[in-house]
Image (cartoon, rainbow, N blue to C red):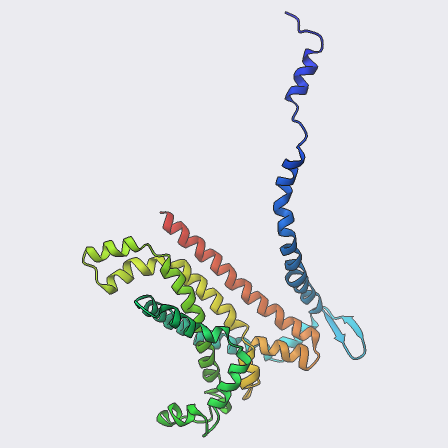
Length: 313
């Protein structure tokens, strides 16, 4: 049976997909158009500055003379040879150790206490979130007056009881003093995060545990705490990144002293790049700080994926 003339061509034209219509093309392009402003801002204020910092780390730039010269890895060797980076890394990690665990534990306890209240929850949320919303530089000035030697509130109360004085000028007490301010500001942030995590815990599971005879500690340990795993990872990573880039309290309260005992990486980056006009040296410190932040973000992604996989099992 022979095919009618033109039937094969007609069949081919039927099977060939038609070009997409204008509404279909718009539907595919719409997400990219809506994301275009965000992608532009991300490129302009994050990606391009990051690439610029990488480039500046390999140049010796004289702002006053308006000259620049490629020096390769000389900025890295000079920065490492001065010993400032090693000291600032140690100081930064000490500050992280003094603030992150404390703020997580106290933030969780405060969140549990606020969640257990029957009245005034909104008031206490606002009270603990005020340090986060306040201008840290202004608050650091207040804290500096509180730590004033022999006249400040800290020396007249806690310092008098413990036999400690002149915290901000003491090589051993200056960093703990700054860490106290960091904890004061960070606890409210962690509290809000944990309150959001506690609100997402299934109430019927906790109620079932209570009916089965589990006490308050049992309900927390077996129901609430496992459900707060992703929240804890997020709070830990964000708190760690905030602690890594601490600058305001250091610049206002101690200026990196005494004897560089409070000179963190962020403060060293400002000192090298802005105060001494050492653009290349400041870029090297910025790259180290960026690398530490990326490591913290990578740890968050790995820990979150691990917790999600464990939850699916």
